[in-house]
Length: 276
Length: 344
Image (cartoon, rainbow over all chains, first blue to last red; front, side):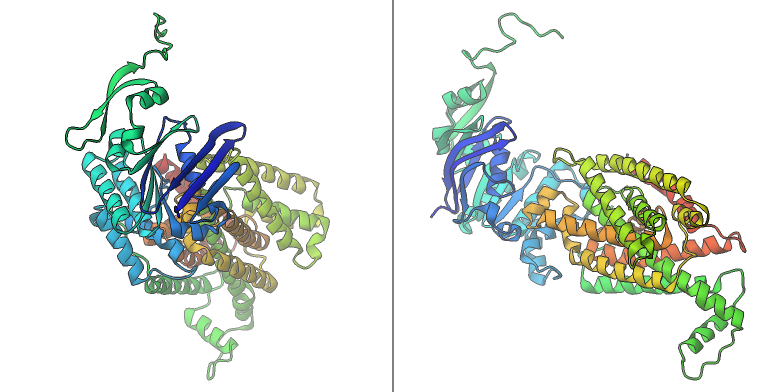
Protein backbone atom coordinates (compact mmCIF):
# COMPACT_ATOMS: atom_id res chain seq x y z
CA UNK A 1 0.00 0.00 0.00
CA UNK A 2 1.42 3.46 -0.83
CA UNK A 3 1.99 5.64 2.24
CA UNK A 4 0.46 8.65 0.53
CA UNK A 5 -2.47 8.68 -1.91
CA UNK A 6 -3.95 11.75 -3.59
CA UNK A 7 -7.09 11.07 -5.56
CA UNK A 8 -8.51 13.76 -7.86
CA UNK A 9 -7.60 16.61 -5.49
CA UNK A 10 -8.92 20.11 -6.13
CA UNK A 11 -8.38 23.15 -3.95
CA UNK A 12 -9.52 26.77 -4.12
CA UNK A 13 -8.59 29.88 -2.13
CA UNK A 14 -11.94 31.65 -2.33
CA UNK A 15 -12.66 31.75 -6.04
CA UNK A 16 -9.06 31.22 -7.08
CA UNK A 17 -8.45 27.67 -8.24
CA UNK A 18 -5.06 26.53 -6.98
CA UNK A 19 -5.09 22.80 -7.60
CA UNK A 20 -7.25 20.85 -9.99
CA UNK A 21 -7.76 17.14 -10.38
CA UNK A 22 -4.36 16.02 -9.12
CA UNK A 23 -3.94 12.27 -8.69
CA UNK A 24 -0.72 10.68 -7.52
CA UNK A 25 0.63 8.17 -5.03
CA UNK A 26 3.93 8.06 -3.18
CA UNK A 27 5.42 4.78 -1.97
CA UNK A 28 7.07 4.28 1.38
CA UNK A 29 10.76 5.19 1.18
CA UNK A 30 10.38 7.08 -2.08
CA UNK A 31 12.12 10.40 -2.75
CA UNK A 32 9.42 12.33 -4.60
CA UNK A 33 9.99 15.73 -6.19
CA UNK A 34 7.44 18.42 -7.07
CA UNK A 35 8.45 20.91 -9.77
CA UNK A 36 6.52 23.79 -11.24
CA UNK A 37 6.57 27.56 -11.78
CA UNK A 38 5.73 30.05 -9.01
CA UNK A 39 2.06 29.88 -8.15
CA UNK A 40 1.52 26.44 -9.69
CA UNK A 41 0.23 25.04 -6.38
CA UNK A 42 3.32 23.27 -5.01
CA UNK A 43 3.24 24.66 -1.48
CA UNK A 44 -0.53 24.23 -1.27
CA UNK A 45 -0.05 20.59 -2.16
CA UNK A 46 2.30 20.22 0.83
CA UNK A 47 -0.28 21.91 3.09
CA UNK A 48 -2.90 19.41 1.94
CA UNK A 49 -0.64 16.40 2.58
CA UNK A 50 0.10 17.80 6.03
CA UNK A 51 -3.60 18.29 6.78
CA UNK A 52 -3.29 22.02 7.52
CA UNK A 53 -5.75 22.52 4.68
CA UNK A 54 -8.33 20.09 3.41
CA UNK A 55 -9.06 19.56 -0.28
CA UNK A 56 -12.28 21.03 -1.72
CA UNK A 57 -12.76 17.91 -3.82
CA UNK A 58 -11.04 14.56 -3.89
CA UNK A 59 -9.41 12.52 -1.19
CA UNK A 60 -6.01 12.42 0.47
CA UNK A 61 -4.95 9.41 2.47
CA UNK A 62 -1.90 9.30 4.69
CA UNK A 63 -1.41 5.65 5.67
CA UNK A 64 -5.05 5.21 4.71
CA UNK A 65 -6.48 8.10 6.78
CA UNK A 66 -7.40 11.65 5.74
CA UNK A 67 -4.79 13.89 7.47
CA UNK A 68 -7.35 16.68 7.93
CA UNK A 69 -9.39 14.36 10.16
CA UNK A 70 -6.51 13.19 12.36
CA UNK A 71 -5.51 14.84 15.65
CA UNK A 72 -2.71 17.32 14.97
CA UNK A 73 -0.43 15.43 17.32
CA UNK A 74 -0.94 12.17 15.39
CA UNK A 75 -0.17 13.91 12.09
CA UNK A 76 2.96 15.45 13.60
CA UNK A 77 4.25 12.02 14.63
CA UNK A 78 3.95 10.90 11.00
CA UNK A 79 4.82 14.01 9.02
CA UNK A 80 7.50 16.64 9.54
CA UNK A 81 7.62 19.83 7.49
CA UNK A 82 10.66 21.91 6.64
CA UNK A 83 9.32 25.38 5.81
CA UNK A 84 11.31 27.94 3.86
CA UNK A 85 11.62 30.31 6.82
CA UNK A 86 10.03 30.87 10.21
CA UNK A 87 9.71 33.90 12.49
CA UNK A 88 12.32 34.54 15.18
CA UNK A 89 10.96 37.48 17.16
CA UNK A 90 12.11 36.24 20.56
CA UNK A 91 15.55 34.91 21.51
CA UNK A 92 15.62 31.13 21.02
CA UNK A 93 18.69 28.93 20.87
CA UNK A 94 19.37 26.42 18.11
CA UNK A 95 19.05 23.57 20.60
CA UNK A 96 15.70 24.87 21.87
CA UNK A 97 14.35 25.01 18.33
CA UNK A 98 15.62 21.55 17.40
CA UNK A 99 14.17 20.12 20.63
CA UNK A 100 10.77 21.50 19.58
CA UNK A 101 10.79 18.65 17.08
CA UNK A 102 10.29 16.24 19.99
CA UNK A 103 6.98 17.91 20.95
CA UNK A 104 4.65 15.40 19.26
CA UNK A 105 6.33 12.60 21.21
CA UNK A 106 6.09 14.27 24.63
CA UNK A 107 3.32 14.44 27.20
CA UNK A 108 1.93 17.84 28.15
CA UNK A 109 4.06 18.40 31.23
CA UNK A 110 6.90 16.02 30.43
CA UNK A 111 10.46 17.26 30.17
CA UNK A 112 12.77 16.04 27.44
CA UNK A 113 14.31 12.69 28.36
CA UNK A 114 17.89 11.62 27.70
CA UNK A 115 16.66 9.95 24.54
CA UNK A 116 14.96 13.14 23.32
CA UNK A 117 18.19 15.05 23.90
CA UNK A 118 20.18 12.36 22.10
CA UNK A 119 17.83 12.46 19.10
CA UNK A 120 18.12 16.25 18.95
CA UNK A 121 21.88 16.07 19.26
CA UNK A 122 22.26 13.56 16.44
CA UNK A 123 19.96 15.70 14.26
CA UNK A 124 22.22 18.69 14.95
CA UNK A 125 25.27 16.58 14.26
CA UNK A 126 23.88 15.41 10.93
CA UNK A 127 23.28 19.01 9.86
CA UNK A 128 26.64 20.34 11.12
CA UNK A 129 24.96 22.37 13.83
CA UNK A 130 26.51 21.01 17.02
CA UNK A 131 28.93 23.96 17.34
CA UNK A 132 25.91 26.30 17.08
CA UNK A 133 23.77 24.53 19.72
CA UNK A 134 23.69 27.41 22.18
CA UNK A 135 23.67 30.22 19.60
CA UNK A 136 20.57 32.39 19.24
CA UNK A 137 18.61 31.95 16.01
CA UNK A 138 18.76 35.66 15.20
CA UNK A 139 22.56 35.49 15.07
CA UNK A 140 22.65 32.79 12.35
CA UNK A 141 22.80 33.24 8.59
CA UNK A 142 19.86 32.30 6.38
CA UNK A 143 21.47 29.02 5.38
CA UNK A 144 22.26 28.10 8.98
CA UNK A 145 18.67 28.82 10.01
CA UNK A 146 17.46 26.61 7.18
CA UNK A 147 19.62 23.78 8.50
CA UNK A 148 18.10 24.28 11.97
CA UNK A 149 14.63 23.78 10.47
CA UNK A 150 15.87 20.59 8.77
CA UNK A 151 17.37 19.36 12.04
CA UNK A 152 14.08 20.05 13.83
CA UNK A 153 12.22 17.99 11.25
CA UNK A 154 14.72 15.13 11.65
CA UNK A 155 14.34 15.29 15.43
CA UNK A 156 10.63 14.70 14.90
CA UNK A 157 11.53 11.19 13.65
CA UNK A 158 8.78 11.28 11.04
CA UNK A 159 7.79 8.66 8.50
CA UNK A 160 7.19 11.33 5.87
CA UNK A 161 9.20 14.52 5.50
CA UNK A 162 7.87 17.44 3.44
CA UNK A 163 10.49 19.86 2.18
CA UNK A 164 9.56 23.28 0.81
CA UNK A 165 12.59 24.40 -1.19
CA UNK A 166 14.84 22.94 1.49
CA UNK A 167 18.14 23.96 -0.04
CA UNK A 168 17.31 27.36 -1.55
CA UNK A 169 19.65 29.30 0.75
CA UNK A 170 22.32 26.63 1.26
CA UNK A 171 25.76 26.66 -0.34
CA UNK A 172 26.49 23.76 -2.70
CA UNK A 173 28.37 21.76 -0.05
CA UNK A 174 25.44 21.91 2.34
CA UNK A 175 22.93 21.32 -0.48
CA UNK A 176 24.65 18.05 -1.29
CA UNK A 177 25.24 17.08 2.34
CA UNK A 178 21.62 17.76 3.28
CA UNK A 179 20.15 15.93 0.32
CA UNK A 180 22.59 13.02 0.74
CA UNK A 181 21.52 12.76 4.36
CA UNK A 182 17.83 12.79 3.52
CA UNK A 183 18.29 10.27 0.72
CA UNK A 184 20.25 7.93 2.95
CA UNK A 185 17.46 8.15 5.55
CA UNK A 186 14.96 7.27 2.85
CA UNK A 187 17.09 4.31 1.70
CA UNK A 188 18.02 2.97 5.14
CA UNK A 189 15.12 3.92 7.39
CA UNK A 190 12.31 3.99 4.84
CA UNK A 191 11.73 7.76 5.27
CA UNK A 192 9.37 9.01 2.58
CA UNK A 193 10.41 12.37 1.13
CA UNK A 194 8.22 14.85 -0.74
CA UNK A 195 10.26 17.85 -1.82
CA UNK A 196 9.20 21.03 -3.58
CA UNK A 197 12.09 22.52 -5.50
CA UNK A 198 13.05 24.87 -8.30
CA UNK A 199 16.40 23.25 -8.96
CA UNK A 200 15.83 20.73 -11.76
CA UNK A 201 19.38 19.41 -11.77
CA UNK A 202 19.27 18.62 -8.07
CA UNK A 203 15.81 17.11 -8.52
CA UNK A 204 17.15 14.89 -11.31
CA UNK A 205 20.03 13.84 -9.11
CA UNK A 206 18.02 12.87 -6.02
CA UNK A 207 14.38 12.21 -6.87
CA UNK A 208 13.07 8.73 -7.67
CA UNK A 209 10.05 10.31 -9.34
CA UNK A 210 8.97 13.85 -10.14
CA UNK A 211 5.59 15.53 -10.60
CA UNK A 212 5.57 18.64 -12.80
CA UNK A 213 2.73 21.03 -12.00
CA UNK A 214 1.32 23.62 -14.36
CA UNK A 215 -1.30 26.06 -13.08
CA UNK A 216 -2.56 23.60 -10.51
CA UNK A 217 -2.79 20.63 -12.85
CA UNK A 218 -0.49 17.66 -13.03
CA UNK A 219 1.41 18.21 -16.28
CA UNK A 220 3.58 15.11 -16.16
CA UNK A 221 4.64 12.46 -13.70
CA UNK A 222 7.42 9.91 -13.83
CA UNK A 223 11.14 9.26 -13.49
CA UNK A 224 13.40 12.33 -13.82
CA UNK A 225 14.38 11.37 -17.40
CA UNK A 226 10.72 11.16 -18.39
CA UNK A 227 9.61 14.45 -16.82
CA UNK A 228 12.60 16.74 -17.31
CA UNK A 229 12.61 17.13 -21.08
CA UNK A 230 13.08 20.15 -23.32
CA UNK A 231 9.51 20.07 -24.56
CA UNK A 232 7.97 19.75 -21.05
CA UNK A 233 10.00 22.60 -19.60
CA UNK A 234 9.35 24.87 -22.56
CA UNK A 235 5.62 24.13 -22.34
CA UNK A 236 5.36 24.76 -18.61
CA UNK A 237 7.92 27.52 -18.01
CA UNK A 238 7.98 29.12 -21.48
CA UNK A 239 11.74 29.60 -21.51
CA UNK A 240 14.42 28.20 -23.79
CA UNK A 241 16.37 25.33 -22.33
CA UNK A 242 18.61 22.60 -23.58
CA UNK A 243 18.29 19.23 -21.91
CA UNK A 244 21.01 16.67 -22.53
CA UNK A 245 22.30 13.69 -20.63
CA UNK A 246 25.01 14.27 -18.11
CA UNK A 247 28.17 12.52 -19.31
CA UNK A 248 28.92 11.03 -15.88
CA UNK A 249 25.53 10.27 -14.35
CA UNK A 250 23.44 9.87 -17.48
CA UNK A 251 20.72 11.94 -15.75
CA UNK A 252 18.93 14.78 -17.55
CA UNK A 253 20.86 18.02 -17.38
CA UNK A 254 19.07 21.34 -17.86
CA UNK A 255 20.92 24.33 -19.28
CA UNK A 256 19.25 27.73 -19.45
CA UNK A 257 19.64 29.45 -22.79
CA UNK A 258 18.01 32.80 -22.06
CA UNK A 259 15.05 34.25 -23.93
CA UNK A 260 11.47 33.05 -24.06
CA UNK A 261 10.64 29.91 -25.94
CA UNK A 262 9.74 30.49 -29.60
CA UNK A 263 6.13 30.29 -30.55
CA UNK A 264 4.80 31.39 -27.17
CA UNK A 265 5.59 35.05 -27.86
CA UNK A 266 6.73 37.58 -25.32
CA UNK A 267 5.23 40.98 -24.77
CA UNK A 268 8.72 42.47 -25.12
CA UNK A 269 9.04 41.11 -28.65
CA UNK A 270 7.89 42.63 -31.97
CA UNK A 271 9.65 45.90 -31.22
CA UNK A 272 7.46 46.82 -28.27
CA UNK A 273 10.27 47.82 -25.94
CA UNK A 274 9.21 48.59 -22.36
CA UNK A 275 8.90 52.30 -21.55
CA UNK A 276 11.50 52.67 -18.85
CA UNK B 1 26.10 36.18 21.67
CA UNK B 2 25.34 32.93 23.43
CA UNK B 3 22.40 32.07 25.54
CA UNK B 4 22.63 32.00 29.31
CA UNK B 5 21.15 28.53 29.60
CA UNK B 6 21.52 25.07 28.13
CA UNK B 7 18.35 23.04 27.63
CA UNK B 8 15.81 23.38 30.38
CA UNK B 9 15.46 20.92 33.22
CA UNK B 10 13.07 20.75 36.13
CA UNK B 11 16.01 21.32 38.48
CA UNK B 12 16.87 24.57 36.74
CA UNK B 13 13.27 25.79 37.01
CA UNK B 14 13.35 24.88 40.69
CA UNK B 15 16.61 26.74 41.30
CA UNK B 16 15.54 29.89 39.49
CA UNK B 17 12.20 29.91 41.32
CA UNK B 18 13.94 29.51 44.69
CA UNK B 19 16.23 32.40 43.86
CA UNK B 20 13.29 34.58 42.85
CA UNK B 21 11.31 33.52 45.94
CA UNK B 22 14.22 34.75 48.07
CA UNK B 23 14.19 38.02 46.12
CA UNK B 24 10.42 38.32 46.61
CA UNK B 25 10.85 37.68 50.34
CA UNK B 26 13.53 40.37 50.55
CA UNK B 27 11.34 42.92 48.79
CA UNK B 28 8.38 42.05 51.05
CA UNK B 29 10.45 42.65 54.16
CA UNK B 30 11.58 46.05 52.87
CA UNK B 31 7.99 46.94 52.00
CA UNK B 32 6.81 45.88 55.46
CA UNK B 33 9.33 48.11 57.16
CA UNK B 34 9.15 51.12 54.83
CA UNK B 35 6.53 53.77 55.42
CA UNK B 36 5.83 57.09 57.13
CA UNK B 37 5.23 55.39 60.49
CA UNK B 38 8.57 53.99 61.64
CA UNK B 39 8.23 50.37 62.76
CA UNK B 40 11.53 48.57 63.27
CA UNK B 41 12.31 45.34 61.48
CA UNK B 42 12.52 43.27 64.69
CA UNK B 43 9.26 44.70 65.92
CA UNK B 44 7.63 43.76 62.59
CA UNK B 45 8.87 40.19 62.84
CA UNK B 46 7.95 39.77 66.49
CA UNK B 47 4.55 41.28 65.82
CA UNK B 48 3.89 38.87 62.94
CA UNK B 49 5.09 35.90 65.00
CA UNK B 50 2.81 36.93 67.84
CA UNK B 51 -0.10 37.39 65.47
CA UNK B 52 0.24 33.83 64.17
CA UNK B 53 0.47 32.66 67.83
CA UNK B 54 4.03 31.46 67.50
CA UNK B 55 4.93 29.85 70.85
CA UNK B 56 6.90 32.16 73.11
CA UNK B 57 6.57 35.26 70.93
CA UNK B 58 5.77 38.51 72.69
CA UNK B 59 4.10 41.35 70.86
CA UNK B 60 6.11 44.62 70.95
CA UNK B 61 3.66 46.57 68.77
CA UNK B 62 1.36 49.32 69.96
CA UNK B 63 -2.28 49.21 68.92
CA UNK B 64 -1.75 51.82 66.23
CA UNK B 65 1.30 50.02 64.86
CA UNK B 66 -0.64 46.78 64.78
CA UNK B 67 -3.39 48.44 62.75
CA UNK B 68 -0.88 49.94 60.32
CA UNK B 69 0.90 46.64 59.86
CA UNK B 70 -2.04 44.26 59.62
CA UNK B 71 -4.80 46.40 58.14
CA UNK B 72 -2.80 48.63 55.82
CA UNK B 73 0.65 47.39 54.89
CA UNK B 74 0.25 43.60 54.73
CA UNK B 75 -2.97 43.58 52.63
CA UNK B 76 -1.49 46.15 50.33
CA UNK B 77 1.76 44.26 49.90
CA UNK B 78 -0.10 41.02 49.21
CA UNK B 79 -2.29 42.76 46.66
CA UNK B 80 0.71 44.39 44.97
CA UNK B 81 2.35 40.98 44.71
CA UNK B 82 -0.75 39.36 43.25
CA UNK B 83 -1.49 42.14 40.76
CA UNK B 84 2.14 42.35 39.63
CA UNK B 85 2.25 38.59 39.17
CA UNK B 86 -1.05 38.55 37.26
CA UNK B 87 -0.13 41.37 34.87
CA UNK B 88 3.31 39.88 34.20
CA UNK B 89 1.94 36.42 33.35
CA UNK B 90 -0.70 37.99 31.13
CA UNK B 91 2.07 39.98 29.44
CA UNK B 92 4.10 36.82 28.80
CA UNK B 93 1.10 35.13 27.20
CA UNK B 94 0.08 38.11 25.05
CA UNK B 95 3.63 38.64 23.80
CA UNK B 96 4.01 34.98 22.96
CA UNK B 97 0.64 34.50 21.31
CA UNK B 98 0.82 37.68 19.25
CA UNK B 99 4.54 37.17 18.61
CA UNK B 100 5.04 40.82 19.43
CA UNK B 101 7.56 41.97 22.04
CA UNK B 102 5.67 45.23 22.50
CA UNK B 103 2.40 43.56 23.54
CA UNK B 104 1.08 43.67 27.10
CA UNK B 105 -2.36 43.90 28.73
CA UNK B 106 -2.13 47.70 28.93
CA UNK B 107 -0.86 48.41 25.40
CA UNK B 108 -3.36 46.00 23.85
CA UNK B 109 -6.26 47.69 25.59
CA UNK B 110 -7.15 44.64 27.68
CA UNK B 111 -6.67 46.59 30.91
CA UNK B 112 -8.74 49.42 29.44
CA UNK B 113 -11.51 47.02 28.45
CA UNK B 114 -11.47 45.47 31.91
CA UNK B 115 -11.64 48.92 33.49
CA UNK B 116 -14.68 49.81 31.37
CA UNK B 117 -16.33 46.59 32.54
CA UNK B 118 -15.55 47.43 36.17
CA UNK B 119 -16.77 51.02 35.86
CA UNK B 120 -19.99 49.91 34.17
CA UNK B 121 -20.51 47.47 37.04
CA UNK B 122 -20.20 50.32 39.54
CA UNK B 123 -22.28 52.86 37.67
CA UNK B 124 -25.14 50.46 36.98
CA UNK B 125 -25.07 48.90 40.43
CA UNK B 126 -24.24 45.45 39.06
CA UNK B 127 -21.09 45.66 41.14
CA UNK B 128 -23.02 44.79 44.26
CA UNK B 129 -23.75 41.33 42.90
CA UNK B 130 -21.24 38.62 43.80
CA UNK B 131 -18.43 38.65 41.22
CA UNK B 132 -20.15 41.65 39.60
CA UNK B 133 -17.07 43.86 39.27
CA UNK B 134 -14.45 41.18 38.44
CA UNK B 135 -16.93 39.37 36.19
CA UNK B 136 -17.62 42.42 34.05
CA UNK B 137 -13.94 43.36 34.15
CA UNK B 138 -13.08 39.94 32.74
CA UNK B 139 -15.76 40.28 30.06
CA UNK B 140 -14.42 43.71 29.09
CA UNK B 141 -10.85 42.42 28.92
CA UNK B 142 -11.84 39.44 26.80
CA UNK B 143 -13.89 41.63 24.48
CA UNK B 144 -10.94 43.93 23.84
CA UNK B 145 -8.47 41.15 23.09
CA UNK B 146 -10.96 39.58 20.68
CA UNK B 147 -11.36 42.97 18.99
CA UNK B 148 -7.58 43.34 18.71
CA UNK B 149 -7.33 39.82 17.35
CA UNK B 150 -10.07 40.41 14.80
CA UNK B 151 -8.70 43.76 13.65
CA UNK B 152 -5.12 42.59 13.27
CA UNK B 153 -5.67 39.62 11.00
CA UNK B 154 -8.31 40.28 8.38
CA UNK B 155 -7.10 37.85 5.75
CA UNK B 156 -5.56 35.11 7.84
CA UNK B 157 -1.96 36.19 7.34
CA UNK B 158 -1.47 37.86 10.70
CA UNK B 159 0.96 40.74 10.70
CA UNK B 160 2.44 41.27 14.12
CA UNK B 161 2.82 45.02 13.66
CA UNK B 162 -0.91 45.28 13.04
CA UNK B 163 -1.74 43.86 16.46
CA UNK B 164 -0.14 46.88 18.07
CA UNK B 165 -2.06 49.26 15.85
CA UNK B 166 -5.27 47.41 16.67
CA UNK B 167 -4.40 47.65 20.37
CA UNK B 168 -4.00 51.41 20.10
CA UNK B 169 -7.41 51.73 18.43
CA UNK B 170 -9.15 49.55 21.00
CA UNK B 171 -7.35 51.28 23.86
CA UNK B 172 -8.31 54.74 22.62
CA UNK B 173 -11.94 53.70 22.32
CA UNK B 174 -12.10 52.24 25.81
CA UNK B 175 -10.27 55.22 27.34
CA UNK B 176 -12.87 57.49 25.77
CA UNK B 177 -15.63 55.27 27.17
CA UNK B 178 -14.18 55.58 30.66
CA UNK B 179 -13.95 59.38 30.29
CA UNK B 180 -17.56 59.41 29.19
CA UNK B 181 -18.63 57.34 32.18
CA UNK B 182 -16.65 59.66 34.46
CA UNK B 183 -18.47 62.68 33.01
CA UNK B 184 -21.93 61.24 33.62
CA UNK B 185 -21.15 59.85 37.05
CA UNK B 186 -22.14 61.92 40.02
CA UNK B 187 -20.84 62.71 43.48
CA UNK B 188 -19.69 59.83 45.60
CA UNK B 189 -19.18 57.34 42.79
CA UNK B 190 -16.77 59.56 40.92
CA UNK B 191 -13.87 58.90 43.24
CA UNK B 192 -14.10 55.16 42.82
CA UNK B 193 -14.32 55.60 39.05
CA UNK B 194 -11.25 57.81 38.84
CA UNK B 195 -9.43 55.18 40.87
CA UNK B 196 -9.54 52.90 37.82
CA UNK B 197 -7.86 55.48 35.65
CA UNK B 198 -4.89 55.94 37.93
CA UNK B 199 -4.13 52.47 39.17
CA UNK B 200 -4.12 52.24 42.95
CA UNK B 201 -3.50 49.46 45.44
CA UNK B 202 -4.66 51.39 48.50
CA UNK B 203 -8.28 50.28 48.54
CA UNK B 204 -7.53 46.59 48.94
CA UNK B 205 -9.81 44.58 51.19
CA UNK B 206 -9.51 40.99 52.27
CA UNK B 207 -12.04 39.86 49.70
CA UNK B 208 -10.16 41.60 46.91
CA UNK B 209 -6.99 39.75 47.80
CA UNK B 210 -8.74 36.41 47.96
CA UNK B 211 -10.47 37.02 44.65
CA UNK B 212 -7.31 38.10 42.84
CA UNK B 213 -5.54 35.03 44.22
CA UNK B 214 -8.24 32.62 43.05
CA UNK B 215 -8.36 34.08 39.53
CA UNK B 216 -4.59 34.13 39.31
CA UNK B 217 -4.24 30.49 40.36
CA UNK B 218 -6.88 29.41 37.84
CA UNK B 219 -5.44 31.41 34.95
CA UNK B 220 -1.84 30.58 35.75
CA UNK B 221 -2.58 26.84 35.84
CA UNK B 222 -3.97 26.97 32.31
CA UNK B 223 -0.92 28.94 31.17
CA UNK B 224 1.55 26.49 32.70
CA UNK B 225 -0.25 23.55 31.10
CA UNK B 226 0.34 25.20 27.72
CA UNK B 227 3.85 26.49 28.37
CA UNK B 228 5.49 24.29 25.77
CA UNK B 229 2.77 25.09 23.23
CA UNK B 230 3.57 28.77 23.75
CA UNK B 231 7.24 28.08 22.99
CA UNK B 232 6.27 26.62 19.66
CA UNK B 233 3.72 29.32 18.88
CA UNK B 234 6.64 31.78 19.09
CA UNK B 235 7.87 30.40 15.77
CA UNK B 236 4.54 30.79 13.99
CA UNK B 237 1.06 29.29 13.89
CA UNK B 238 1.68 27.11 10.87
CA UNK B 239 4.78 25.62 12.50
CA UNK B 240 2.78 24.97 15.66
CA UNK B 241 0.17 23.06 13.66
CA UNK B 242 2.93 21.07 11.98
CA UNK B 243 4.39 20.16 15.37
CA UNK B 244 1.03 18.85 16.54
CA UNK B 245 -0.47 21.77 18.49
CA UNK B 246 -4.23 22.26 18.02
CA UNK B 247 -3.63 25.97 17.52
CA UNK B 248 -7.18 27.35 17.59
CA UNK B 249 -8.14 25.70 20.86
CA UNK B 250 -4.82 26.46 22.54
CA UNK B 251 -4.94 30.09 21.47
CA UNK B 252 -8.49 30.54 22.75
CA UNK B 253 -7.70 28.94 26.13
CA UNK B 254 -4.64 31.14 26.54
CA UNK B 255 -6.41 34.34 25.49
CA UNK B 256 -9.23 33.61 27.94
CA UNK B 257 -6.89 32.85 30.83
CA UNK B 258 -4.72 35.91 30.18
CA UNK B 259 -7.85 38.07 30.02
CA UNK B 260 -9.14 36.43 33.19
CA UNK B 261 -6.08 37.27 35.26
CA UNK B 262 -5.92 40.77 33.73
CA UNK B 263 -9.59 41.31 34.57
CA UNK B 264 -9.01 40.18 38.14
CA UNK B 265 -5.98 42.44 38.52
CA UNK B 266 -7.76 45.47 37.05
CA UNK B 267 -10.91 44.97 39.11
CA UNK B 268 -8.92 45.23 42.37
CA UNK B 269 -6.27 47.76 41.38
CA UNK B 270 -7.35 49.80 38.36
CA UNK B 271 -5.19 50.26 35.30
CA UNK B 272 -1.53 49.78 36.13
CA UNK B 273 0.51 50.09 32.97
CA UNK B 274 3.79 48.66 31.73
CA UNK B 275 4.29 45.95 34.37
CA UNK B 276 3.13 43.32 31.90
CA UNK B 277 5.49 44.73 29.29
CA UNK B 278 8.69 45.14 31.27
CA UNK B 279 8.72 42.10 33.52
CA UNK B 280 8.60 39.44 30.77
CA UNK B 281 11.45 41.15 28.92
CA UNK B 282 13.66 41.43 31.98
CA UNK B 283 13.01 37.79 32.86
CA UNK B 284 13.67 36.70 29.27
CA UNK B 285 17.00 38.52 29.28
CA UNK B 286 17.95 36.82 32.55
CA UNK B 287 16.68 33.29 32.02
CA UNK B 288 15.79 32.75 28.33
CA UNK B 289 12.55 32.43 26.36
CA UNK B 290 11.35 28.96 27.39
CA UNK B 291 7.87 29.50 28.79
CA UNK B 292 8.18 26.62 31.22
CA UNK B 293 10.63 28.83 33.11
CA UNK B 294 9.50 32.23 31.84
CA UNK B 295 5.97 31.88 33.24
CA UNK B 296 6.78 30.99 36.87
CA UNK B 297 9.78 33.33 36.89
CA UNK B 298 7.65 36.22 35.61
CA UNK B 299 5.00 35.40 38.22
CA UNK B 300 7.51 35.77 41.06
CA UNK B 301 9.55 38.61 39.61
CA UNK B 302 6.41 40.54 38.60
CA UNK B 303 5.07 40.25 42.13
CA UNK B 304 8.32 41.57 43.58
CA UNK B 305 8.49 44.33 40.97
CA UNK B 306 5.06 45.78 41.71
CA UNK B 307 5.63 45.47 45.47
CA UNK B 308 8.79 47.52 45.08
CA UNK B 309 7.05 50.08 42.84
CA UNK B 310 4.20 50.43 45.33
CA UNK B 311 6.63 50.88 48.20
CA UNK B 312 8.28 53.72 46.28
CA UNK B 313 4.83 55.18 45.63
CA UNK B 314 4.08 55.09 49.35
CA UNK B 315 7.28 56.64 50.67
CA UNK B 316 8.52 59.08 48.05
CA UNK B 317 6.07 61.88 48.95
CA UNK B 318 5.22 60.60 52.44
CA UNK B 319 2.89 61.19 54.12
CA UNK B 320 1.15 61.82 50.77
CA UNK B 321 1.02 58.95 48.26
CA UNK B 322 1.52 58.56 44.55
CA UNK B 323 -0.73 56.17 42.65
CA UNK B 324 1.45 53.17 41.82
CA UNK B 325 0.52 53.52 38.14
CA UNK B 326 2.49 56.77 38.11
CA UNK B 327 5.63 54.95 39.25
CA UNK B 328 5.30 52.07 36.78
CA UNK B 329 4.55 54.43 33.89
CA UNK B 330 7.48 56.69 34.81
CA UNK B 331 9.91 53.81 34.47
CA UNK B 332 7.86 51.91 31.89
CA UNK B 333 7.37 54.49 29.15
CA UNK B 334 11.11 55.14 28.65
CA UNK B 335 11.67 51.37 28.67
CA UNK B 336 8.98 50.92 26.02
CA UNK B 337 10.68 53.58 23.92
CA UNK B 338 14.00 51.79 24.32
CA UNK B 339 12.48 48.48 23.17
CA UNK B 340 10.88 50.11 20.14
CA UNK B 341 14.13 51.78 19.21
CA UNK B 342 15.99 48.50 19.54
CA UNK B 343 13.54 46.43 17.52
CA UNK B 344 13.25 49.04 14.75
